[in-house]
Image (cartoon, rainbow, N blue to C red; front, side):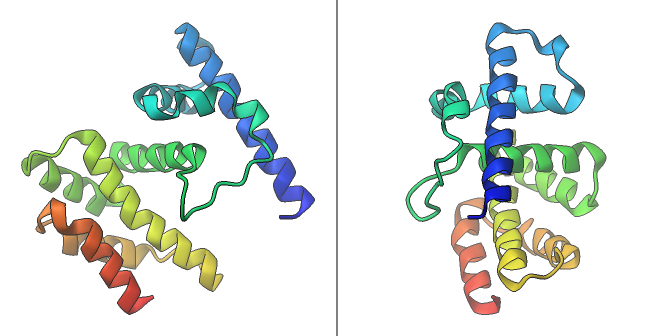
Length: 164
């Protein structure tokens, strides 16, 4: 990783740490709307509270995608999806969300399923050095909304293994 990306990661983790400190004290009014959204999502993820607490000291830590979940990336995905749901843009996110709620999933579980789809698309985008494929995203959300949610992670993985 080059020095610019290292600096960016350090600044991002310091930002997360400051937002976390405000969230811990309940001082959300001191944050702007985006930061408040992140703080609320961070508070929902108790499994990452320790990492948020020391985020300013984790600036050099690179998470291994095979063995670790990057809590900062995870929270960022949550925020992206929550923004899409709020804006209903693309509408397919909102439709998928409602279809999964009808199948008795929690809001949090549905956001994770959407994040699963989104992560594969972003990975493909970065790997192929192409623009994000919004049409494929919308198409997959349409395809998966009528499927059994328990089978979706395996189906998503299979689709991406076959299609790249």
